[in-house]
Image 1 (cartoon, rainbow, N blue to C red):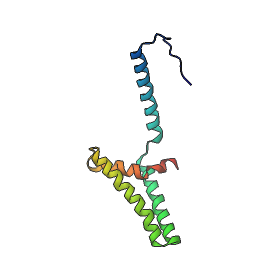
Image 2 (image 1 turned 45 degrees about the vertical axis):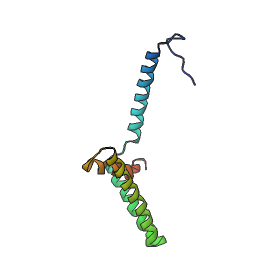
Image 3 (image 1 turned 180 degrees about the vertical axis):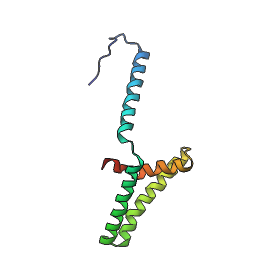
Image 4 (image 1 turned 90 degrees about the horizontal axis):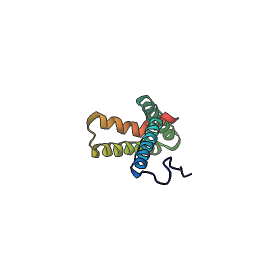
Length: 108
């Protein structure tokens, strides 16, 4: 649905641009609040991965468990590499990669 401009057909392009920027900023802030992960949720996610790894190892053998653990390990290393390329250093890079890798448990 296209929203009509309150200024009418002779709208000021600068005002429209400012309104668009303001609306996008508010929408992005709301999205960040919804998908934000915290450390307790990431720890829970890591626990779920460890349990899944053990269960897969018991059912499919050690190779299956190693595959599950390896996928999450590669995801963590990839996220850490991205953080380092973006200029985030030290423990903060590790924390962000950890939250990215295991923070999905916030939605469980």
